[in-house]
Length: 358
Image 1 (tube, rainbow, N blue to C red):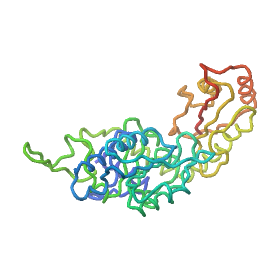
Image 2 (cartoon, rainbow, N blue to C red; image 1 turned 120 degrees about the horizontal axis):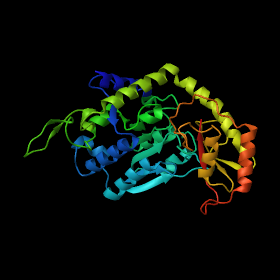
Image 3 (cartoon, helix red, strand yellow; image 1 turned 45 degrees about the horizontal axis):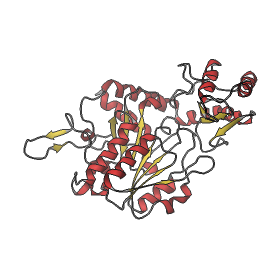
Image 4 (cartoon, rainbow, N blue to C red; image 1 turned 30 degrees about the vertical axis):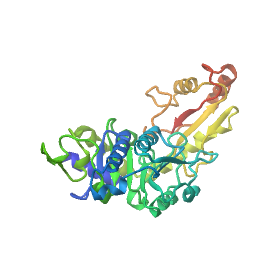
Protein backbone atom coordinates (compact mmCIF):
# COMPACT_ATOMS: atom_id res chain seq x y z
CA UNK A 1 0.00 0.00 0.00
CA UNK A 2 1.43 3.37 -1.04
CA UNK A 3 0.47 5.03 2.25
CA UNK A 4 2.34 2.52 4.40
CA UNK A 5 5.27 2.43 1.98
CA UNK A 6 5.60 6.19 2.42
CA UNK A 7 5.41 5.83 6.20
CA UNK A 8 8.27 3.33 6.00
CA UNK A 9 10.39 5.72 3.93
CA UNK A 10 9.89 8.52 6.44
CA UNK A 11 10.74 6.11 9.26
CA UNK A 12 13.95 5.09 7.52
CA UNK A 13 14.97 8.74 7.13
CA UNK A 14 14.89 9.28 10.91
CA UNK A 15 16.00 5.83 12.09
CA UNK A 16 12.59 4.66 13.30
CA UNK A 17 10.95 1.24 13.11
CA UNK A 18 8.30 0.59 10.45
CA UNK A 19 7.70 -3.18 10.59
CA UNK A 20 4.04 -4.13 10.94
CA UNK A 21 3.08 -4.08 14.59
CA UNK A 22 6.23 -2.12 15.49
CA UNK A 23 5.52 1.18 13.72
CA UNK A 24 6.92 4.29 15.42
CA UNK A 25 5.73 6.99 13.00
CA UNK A 26 2.32 8.63 13.44
CA UNK A 27 0.90 10.76 10.62
CA UNK A 28 -0.29 14.20 11.76
CA UNK A 29 -1.40 17.44 10.12
CA UNK A 30 2.03 18.96 10.87
CA UNK A 31 4.47 19.51 13.71
CA UNK A 32 2.03 21.80 15.50
CA UNK A 33 -0.64 19.12 15.36
CA UNK A 34 1.80 16.48 16.58
CA UNK A 35 2.91 18.54 19.57
CA UNK A 36 -0.68 19.39 20.45
CA UNK A 37 -1.54 15.70 20.15
CA UNK A 38 1.09 14.94 22.77
CA UNK A 39 0.02 17.73 25.12
CA UNK A 40 -3.63 16.65 24.84
CA UNK A 41 -2.79 12.99 25.37
CA UNK A 42 -0.69 13.87 28.43
CA UNK A 43 -3.64 15.88 29.70
CA UNK A 44 -5.96 12.93 29.15
CA UNK A 45 -3.56 10.70 31.06
CA UNK A 46 -3.64 13.26 33.87
CA UNK A 47 -7.42 12.72 34.02
CA UNK A 48 -6.91 9.00 34.47
CA UNK A 49 -7.45 8.01 30.85
CA UNK A 50 -5.33 5.23 29.40
CA UNK A 51 -5.17 3.10 32.52
CA UNK A 52 -2.09 2.07 34.44
CA UNK A 53 0.26 2.28 31.47
CA UNK A 54 -0.55 5.95 30.87
CA UNK A 55 0.29 7.04 34.42
CA UNK A 56 3.87 7.78 33.33
CA UNK A 57 2.46 10.76 31.38
CA UNK A 58 0.15 12.07 34.12
CA UNK A 59 0.74 15.47 35.69
CA UNK A 60 -0.44 16.99 38.95
CA UNK A 61 0.20 20.19 40.93
CA UNK A 62 3.85 20.36 41.95
CA UNK A 63 5.08 18.50 38.86
CA UNK A 64 7.26 20.34 36.34
CA UNK A 65 7.30 20.78 32.59
CA UNK A 66 10.60 22.07 31.19
CA UNK A 67 11.04 23.90 27.88
CA UNK A 68 13.62 26.45 26.66
CA UNK A 69 13.58 30.13 25.80
CA UNK A 70 14.36 29.16 22.20
CA UNK A 71 11.10 27.29 21.63
CA UNK A 72 8.76 27.93 18.74
CA UNK A 73 5.22 28.74 19.84
CA UNK A 74 4.20 25.29 18.62
CA UNK A 75 6.22 23.86 21.51
CA UNK A 76 5.80 26.54 24.15
CA UNK A 77 2.05 27.07 23.96
CA UNK A 78 0.77 23.46 24.04
CA UNK A 79 2.90 22.68 27.09
CA UNK A 80 2.19 26.02 28.72
CA UNK A 81 -1.53 25.26 28.39
CA UNK A 82 -0.95 21.73 29.70
CA UNK A 83 0.72 23.21 32.78
CA UNK A 84 -2.25 25.52 33.32
CA UNK A 85 -4.75 22.65 32.98
CA UNK A 86 -2.94 20.30 35.33
CA UNK A 87 -1.46 22.70 37.88
CA UNK A 88 2.09 21.75 36.88
CA UNK A 89 4.87 24.35 36.92
CA UNK A 90 6.43 25.51 33.66
CA UNK A 91 10.21 25.97 33.76
CA UNK A 92 12.77 26.72 31.07
CA UNK A 93 16.40 26.66 30.05
CA UNK A 94 18.05 30.03 29.49
CA UNK A 95 20.14 30.88 26.43
CA UNK A 96 23.74 32.00 26.14
CA UNK A 97 24.89 35.16 24.35
CA UNK A 98 24.72 33.38 20.96
CA UNK A 99 21.18 32.16 21.49
CA UNK A 100 22.17 28.59 22.28
CA UNK A 101 20.27 26.57 24.87
CA UNK A 102 22.25 26.32 28.12
CA UNK A 103 22.45 22.52 28.13
CA UNK A 104 25.18 22.72 30.75
CA UNK A 105 22.52 23.65 33.33
CA UNK A 106 20.48 20.47 32.81
CA UNK A 107 21.18 19.15 36.30
CA UNK A 108 19.85 22.34 37.86
CA UNK A 109 16.85 22.96 35.58
CA UNK A 110 15.57 19.36 35.50
CA UNK A 111 14.69 18.08 38.97
CA UNK A 112 13.08 15.04 40.52
CA UNK A 113 9.72 16.80 40.05
CA UNK A 114 10.17 17.16 36.27
CA UNK A 115 7.79 14.98 34.26
CA UNK A 116 8.11 16.37 30.72
CA UNK A 117 11.01 18.02 28.90
CA UNK A 118 10.33 19.55 25.47
CA UNK A 119 13.29 21.03 23.58
CA UNK A 120 14.09 22.25 20.09
CA UNK A 121 16.82 20.36 18.25
CA UNK A 122 17.75 23.38 16.12
CA UNK A 123 16.71 26.98 16.76
CA UNK A 124 14.30 28.06 14.03
CA UNK A 125 15.55 31.67 14.10
CA UNK A 126 19.26 31.37 14.91
CA UNK A 127 20.10 28.00 13.37
CA UNK A 128 21.90 26.97 16.56
CA UNK A 129 22.03 23.21 17.14
CA UNK A 130 21.11 22.31 20.70
CA UNK A 131 23.41 19.97 22.57
CA UNK A 132 20.54 17.69 23.55
CA UNK A 133 22.55 14.74 24.89
CA UNK A 134 22.98 16.04 28.47
CA UNK A 135 19.34 17.17 28.54
CA UNK A 136 18.05 13.77 27.44
CA UNK A 137 20.36 12.00 29.87
CA UNK A 138 19.19 14.12 32.79
CA UNK A 139 15.52 13.82 31.81
CA UNK A 140 15.73 10.04 31.79
CA UNK A 141 17.65 10.02 35.07
CA UNK A 142 14.64 11.55 36.81
CA UNK A 143 12.09 9.52 34.83
CA UNK A 144 10.85 12.40 32.66
CA UNK A 145 9.52 12.06 29.11
CA UNK A 146 11.66 13.82 26.48
CA UNK A 147 9.99 15.51 23.49
CA UNK A 148 12.07 16.85 20.59
CA UNK A 149 11.06 19.55 18.13
CA UNK A 150 12.82 18.19 15.04
CA UNK A 151 11.38 20.58 12.46
CA UNK A 152 14.73 22.15 11.61
CA UNK A 153 16.92 19.09 12.10
CA UNK A 154 15.20 16.46 9.94
CA UNK A 155 15.67 18.43 6.67
CA UNK A 156 19.16 19.69 7.51
CA UNK A 157 20.94 17.00 9.53
CA UNK A 158 21.32 13.25 9.56
CA UNK A 159 19.18 12.20 12.53
CA UNK A 160 18.60 8.85 14.19
CA UNK A 161 15.99 9.04 16.92
CA UNK A 162 16.98 5.65 18.33
CA UNK A 163 20.59 6.74 18.69
CA UNK A 164 19.51 10.06 20.22
CA UNK A 165 17.25 8.18 22.67
CA UNK A 166 14.39 10.67 22.38
CA UNK A 167 10.95 9.50 23.51
CA UNK A 168 8.95 11.60 21.04
CA UNK A 169 9.81 13.90 18.13
CA UNK A 170 7.66 16.01 15.82
CA UNK A 171 8.32 17.64 12.46
CA UNK A 172 6.55 18.85 9.30
CA UNK A 173 6.73 17.47 5.78
CA UNK A 174 6.92 20.84 4.06
CA UNK A 175 10.25 21.58 5.73
CA UNK A 176 11.72 18.38 4.28
CA UNK A 177 10.67 19.34 0.72
CA UNK A 178 7.29 17.62 0.98
CA UNK A 179 3.76 19.07 0.85
CA UNK A 180 2.04 21.29 3.37
CA UNK A 181 -0.71 20.02 5.64
CA UNK A 182 1.05 16.88 6.83
CA UNK A 183 3.69 16.02 9.39
CA UNK A 184 4.91 13.22 11.58
CA UNK A 185 5.21 12.27 15.22
CA UNK A 186 7.87 9.76 16.22
CA UNK A 187 7.39 7.83 19.42
CA UNK A 188 9.23 4.92 20.96
CA UNK A 189 6.96 1.95 20.42
CA UNK A 190 6.43 1.31 24.11
CA UNK A 191 5.58 4.99 24.61
CA UNK A 192 3.00 4.98 21.82
CA UNK A 193 1.43 1.82 23.19
CA UNK A 194 1.02 3.46 26.62
CA UNK A 195 -0.19 6.84 25.33
CA UNK A 196 -3.97 7.44 25.40
CA UNK A 197 -5.58 8.85 22.23
CA UNK A 198 -6.07 12.58 21.77
CA UNK A 199 -8.41 12.72 18.76
CA UNK A 200 -11.43 10.54 18.25
CA UNK A 201 -13.49 9.28 15.34
CA UNK A 202 -13.28 6.77 12.56
CA UNK A 203 -10.19 4.76 11.65
CA UNK A 204 -8.85 4.67 15.24
CA UNK A 205 -11.38 2.50 17.08
CA UNK A 206 -11.82 -1.27 17.16
CA UNK A 207 -15.20 -1.43 18.91
CA UNK A 208 -17.59 1.19 20.23
CA UNK A 209 -20.63 0.82 22.47
CA UNK A 210 -23.28 3.19 23.78
CA UNK A 211 -22.96 2.07 27.39
CA UNK A 212 -19.24 1.37 27.87
CA UNK A 213 -15.83 2.65 26.90
CA UNK A 214 -14.61 2.13 23.37
CA UNK A 215 -11.79 -0.21 22.50
CA UNK A 216 -9.14 1.67 20.55
CA UNK A 217 -6.74 0.39 17.93
CA UNK A 218 -3.03 -0.13 18.42
CA UNK A 219 -0.58 2.60 17.35
CA UNK A 220 -0.18 4.29 14.99
CA UNK A 221 -3.87 4.00 13.96
CA UNK A 222 -4.95 4.99 17.50
CA UNK A 223 -3.65 8.50 16.81
CA UNK A 224 -4.81 8.86 13.20
CA UNK A 225 -8.54 9.53 13.50
CA UNK A 226 -10.47 10.39 10.36
CA UNK A 227 -9.64 10.18 6.67
CA UNK A 228 -5.98 9.58 5.94
CA UNK A 229 -4.14 12.31 3.97
CA UNK A 230 -2.98 9.75 1.42
CA UNK A 231 -1.73 12.11 -1.28
CA UNK A 232 0.26 14.22 1.17
CA UNK A 233 1.86 11.23 2.87
CA UNK A 234 2.82 9.60 -0.42
CA UNK A 235 4.42 12.89 -1.52
CA UNK A 236 6.26 13.15 1.81
CA UNK A 237 7.57 9.63 1.25
CA UNK A 238 8.98 10.72 -2.11
CA UNK A 239 10.65 13.68 -0.40
CA UNK A 240 12.18 11.42 2.26
CA UNK A 241 13.50 9.08 -0.42
CA UNK A 242 14.94 12.04 -2.34
CA UNK A 243 16.80 13.24 0.75
CA UNK A 244 18.22 9.79 1.41
CA UNK A 245 19.31 9.42 -2.21
CA UNK A 246 21.20 12.72 -2.07
CA UNK A 247 22.66 11.80 1.31
CA UNK A 248 22.17 13.94 4.38
CA UNK A 249 25.95 14.17 4.76
CA UNK A 250 26.12 15.82 1.33
CA UNK A 251 23.35 18.23 2.23
CA UNK A 252 25.14 19.18 5.44
CA UNK A 253 28.40 19.81 3.58
CA UNK A 254 26.68 21.93 0.93
CA UNK A 255 24.89 23.95 3.58
CA UNK A 256 28.12 24.64 5.45
CA UNK A 257 29.54 26.17 2.27
CA UNK A 258 26.51 28.45 1.89
CA UNK A 259 26.57 29.37 5.57
CA UNK A 260 30.18 30.50 5.29
CA UNK A 261 29.01 33.08 2.76
CA UNK A 262 25.97 34.17 4.74
CA UNK A 263 28.00 34.75 7.89
CA UNK A 264 30.17 37.24 6.00
CA UNK A 265 27.27 39.68 6.39
CA UNK A 266 28.54 40.26 9.89
CA UNK A 267 31.59 41.98 8.42
CA UNK A 268 29.44 44.67 6.78
CA UNK A 269 29.18 47.94 8.69
CA UNK A 270 25.77 48.25 10.35
CA UNK A 271 24.80 44.58 10.06
CA UNK A 272 24.76 42.36 13.12
CA UNK A 273 24.38 38.58 13.11
CA UNK A 274 21.81 37.37 15.65
CA UNK A 275 22.93 33.95 16.80
CA UNK A 276 26.15 31.97 16.37
CA UNK A 277 28.81 33.80 14.40
CA UNK A 278 30.89 30.72 13.71
CA UNK A 279 29.92 27.97 11.29
CA UNK A 280 30.04 25.29 13.97
CA UNK A 281 27.11 23.41 15.54
CA UNK A 282 24.62 25.30 13.43
CA UNK A 283 22.59 24.98 10.23
CA UNK A 284 22.25 27.53 7.44
CA UNK A 285 19.58 29.68 9.08
CA UNK A 286 21.26 33.06 9.63
CA UNK A 287 19.36 35.82 11.40
CA UNK A 288 20.61 39.38 11.14
CA UNK A 289 19.59 42.97 11.63
CA UNK A 290 20.41 46.10 9.64
CA UNK A 291 20.74 49.12 11.88
CA UNK A 292 17.82 51.54 11.45
CA UNK A 293 16.03 49.53 8.73
CA UNK A 294 12.83 47.57 9.27
CA UNK A 295 13.18 43.85 8.43
CA UNK A 296 10.29 44.06 5.94
CA UNK A 297 12.24 46.61 3.91
CA UNK A 298 15.40 44.51 4.11
CA UNK A 299 13.47 41.46 2.98
CA UNK A 300 11.95 43.23 -0.02
CA UNK A 301 15.33 44.58 -1.05
CA UNK A 302 17.21 41.30 -0.94
CA UNK A 303 14.32 39.58 -2.72
CA UNK A 304 14.61 42.14 -5.52
CA UNK A 305 18.31 41.28 -5.78
CA UNK A 306 17.46 37.62 -6.41
CA UNK A 307 18.91 36.48 -3.09
CA UNK A 308 15.71 35.41 -1.39
CA UNK A 309 13.60 32.51 -2.58
CA UNK A 310 11.89 33.18 -5.95
CA UNK A 311 8.46 32.81 -4.32
CA UNK A 312 8.84 36.53 -3.52
CA UNK A 313 8.86 36.12 0.21
CA UNK A 314 11.49 37.95 2.29
CA UNK A 315 11.90 34.91 4.51
CA UNK A 316 12.89 31.76 2.75
CA UNK A 317 11.18 28.71 4.22
CA UNK A 318 13.46 26.57 6.35
CA UNK A 319 12.77 23.60 4.12
CA UNK A 320 13.41 25.34 0.81
CA UNK A 321 15.92 23.28 -1.22
CA UNK A 322 19.49 24.56 -0.84
CA UNK A 323 20.08 24.35 -4.58
CA UNK A 324 22.13 27.46 -5.26
CA UNK A 325 25.02 29.24 -3.67
CA UNK A 326 24.10 32.46 -1.92
CA UNK A 327 26.77 35.12 -1.65
CA UNK A 328 26.77 38.85 -0.94
CA UNK A 329 28.18 40.61 -3.98
CA UNK A 330 29.90 43.96 -3.37
CA UNK A 331 26.97 45.74 -5.09
CA UNK A 332 24.52 44.22 -2.60
CA UNK A 333 26.77 45.12 0.32
CA UNK A 334 26.89 48.75 -0.84
CA UNK A 335 23.11 48.87 -1.23
CA UNK A 336 22.55 47.45 2.25
CA UNK A 337 24.85 50.07 3.72
CA UNK A 338 23.26 52.85 1.65
CA UNK A 339 19.77 51.77 2.71
CA UNK A 340 20.86 51.82 6.33
CA UNK A 341 22.02 55.42 6.02
CA UNK A 342 18.96 56.63 4.08
CA UNK A 343 16.12 54.79 5.80
CA UNK A 344 14.75 55.77 9.15
CA UNK A 345 12.97 53.52 11.64
CA UNK A 346 9.91 51.87 10.10
CA UNK A 347 6.67 52.36 12.02
CA UNK A 348 8.52 53.15 15.21
CA UNK A 349 10.80 50.11 15.09
CA UNK A 350 14.32 50.93 16.24
CA UNK A 351 16.05 47.68 15.36
CA UNK A 352 14.68 44.37 14.15
CA UNK A 353 15.95 41.18 12.66
CA UNK A 354 15.56 39.63 9.28
CA UNK A 355 16.36 36.07 8.31
CA UNK A 356 18.00 34.39 5.33
CA UNK A 357 18.02 30.67 4.76
CA UNK A 358 20.75 28.98 2.84
